[in-house]
Length: 131
Image (cartoon, rainbow, N blue to C red; front, side, top):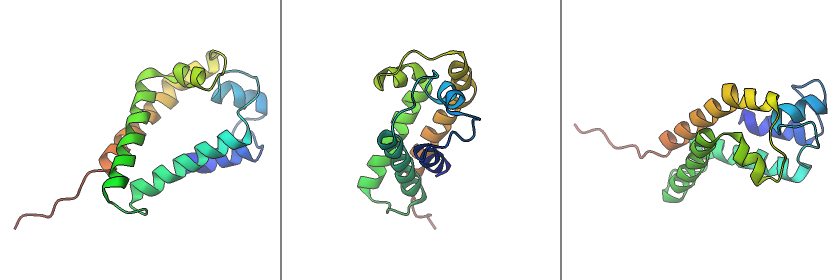
């Protein structure tokens, strides 16, 4: 849910936690060019909020919810394995600069792997104890 809130903050125009939009762009999209617009940033905010609600069980625990968790978990694991370059290319953004590559290796990829594994664990069906 924290990622959702962070993207909503960016959609509002704030560069937080960076000092300015240039630093935010270098850290988040790999260049000091323009950040994605409000709509795509809100889409990410909504998607991460949905993932959090699904993982918590707030939207139910049926087959559709488990399938959605598997799909989101797989996307996050693929993001961790492939790195940020393909994600930037898919959004039509230029190749990443040094700041983004460093953050991707140290923060973004491990976080994506952790989130992906967490989503896969969240989709597991609880089995009644034998007794």
